[in-house]
Amino acid sequence: MIRCVIIDDEPAAREILTSYVSKVSSIKLMETFSSSLAAREYLKENDTDLLLLDIEMPNLTGIELLNSLPKSPEVIFTTAYSEYAIDGYELSVIDYLLKPISMERFLKAIDKAEKKLEHQNTQNNCFKVKADGRIYQLPHEEILFAESMGYYITIYTQEKKITFYQTMKSLNQSLPSQEYERVHKSYLVRLSAIEYLEGNQIKIGEHTIPIGKTFKEKFMKSYM
Image (cartoon, rainbow, N blue to C red; front, top):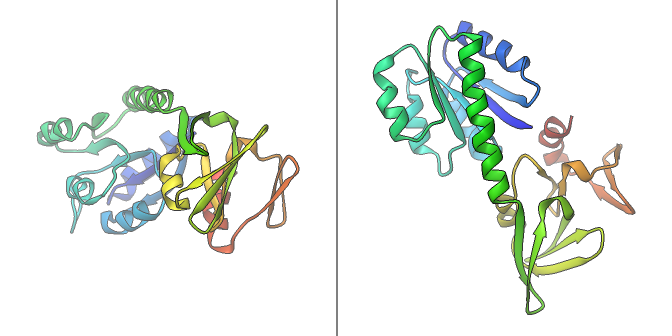
């Protein structure tokens, strides 16, 4: 599932893009923003795969927003001004949509985004870690969840546990955001490994994992 954010200061444009996104089953709309400054704060704290981003906005343009982010998601520019096309290509954005945007043209851009993100996931479908004098290569689909204990992480799979030195923040950044979610200061889970939720607990096999209060809202948006 592609996590998408729409950023456009025009209400009509946001409404149209929201409607288009709702018709594509592979995309999950996380948030919409009329302000690039507000969007910047959100993007700093929340994993996002794709931006539908207007360029001409007050205070901070779409291009300035991208240049200000330490790590930018993939981007499809949506703008009424054709003169920005060169800037878009220089920033290696996926596509450049000129308003008014048709559904047909929107879907072509989304197809490009899906192919690029799928390729990235294929290239990075294993997690490599050094532990106990060995180098382990773990396919993402084998990792059930991770638990932190101080500066050590234990990764759980169906068959084994591997403990190594790393912070949870660093591990979270190393794994694909579409597949994993931080649910507690000490736990990160693979979303597809979850059997069920009960109250503020996650059940994965014989393991019960707590959901932290500060992580619950973001987790539920990703999981539901």
